Image 1 (cartoon, rainbow, N blue to C red):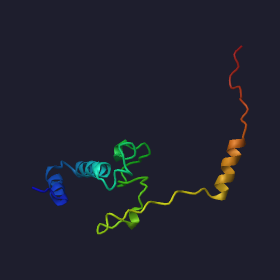
Image 2 (image 1 turned 135 degrees about the vertical axis):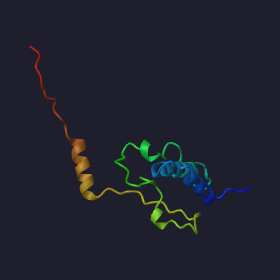
Image 3 (image 1 turned 60 degrees about the vertical axis):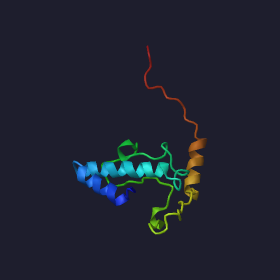
Image 4 (image 1 turned 120 degrees about the horizontal axis):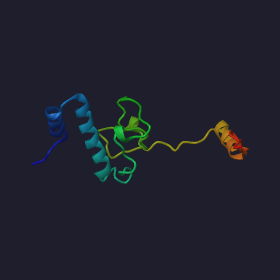
Length: 117
């Protein structure tokens, strides 16, 4: 017997104790899918897929499921799941390069806050 996504989601709805629990179940399902599906497993691993509660930069619950994903989900189509577009790598702008170079060249002098007598 084949289990469909609709069947799994219906079971989640049936057995979830709250909307938060329902969301957690879906989040775990999707994370495992990204890690194990042959189409995505070369891009996603246990090291770069976190549940929201595990992500170190989280703030509240904003409904974000794919924070900092390399995939451009705005171009994703359920009708063309094999066509994955990755986001372009970020390029530093000139003022950012200047600021980084200034920081790298800075020589901080140690300061004495307390003097032991």
